[in-house]
Length: 359
Image (cartoon, rainbow, N blue to C red):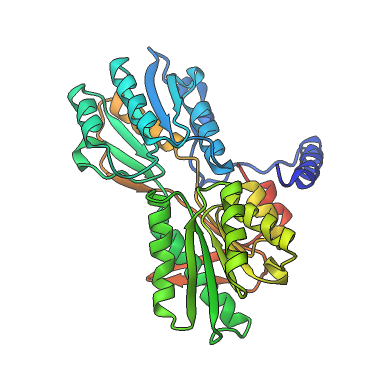
């Protein structure tokens, strides 16, 4: 991992905390995960068979999401999990869902690689009487074909990034300067890419002095981020802001900037990222990334709770369910940002913030 030194320091610090018996209790407003449910409240009858079609393993965020699903849909929590890593291949993912249907699972969970191409297999699941849940990325199909969606408001994430950049530039006395922006986008056609681009572009359109130089697909990977950043450095002489649509792309961009001898973060070009995984926030703490906007990967416990409700004969009333997320920055200079009618507090990353990180 990129922040091995920081992790080592945290392990030692945590050891000291545990030894002194000073661990903080779980915050009351945090979601209860399946593993946190007391043993006497767990589902103790026949295991609930769940098929989960995951996007792949392209990023630290994705790995955290998979680990959460593995822990949540475990036998100790009353589940039998059938898991398929589609390795970012939409055809493999659709075939995995068909396989789940053939194996007569009780429920299907899909984190769709792309939004389109789902109607046929979703109809097959409905005809088989298998409820389907969608997480993380959105899906483009008839709404009656799935029970509920749990995940992030990607457009709101993009808007928050735009609002922060506006406030940050004003704070630095650059509010009226011409600003050249390069975007390293996520997987083209994914709802995360579509939403983050749409949200951030809203601010670009409202700022005549903001110029988007380019936007290219970095595939949500570190190698993709480095490749695209190298292309930008060869093509453009003056880049003021680099928007990376996840932390892995940001690390690739940082690698490319270092190799080219370019200044970034607190010392140069502003770097904005999304996901806010542990190592991403470690780079925010170090000043390599100026701001990072959370995309919470821990949606599996919410789905597990919904499945238990259905298994008890209860109804799921909300189709779209957004998970709470936070916004982080390196400098303690922006207290809050305003997006439409929302006011969002900015969190300045400290060691204490890293200590509390679950992923």
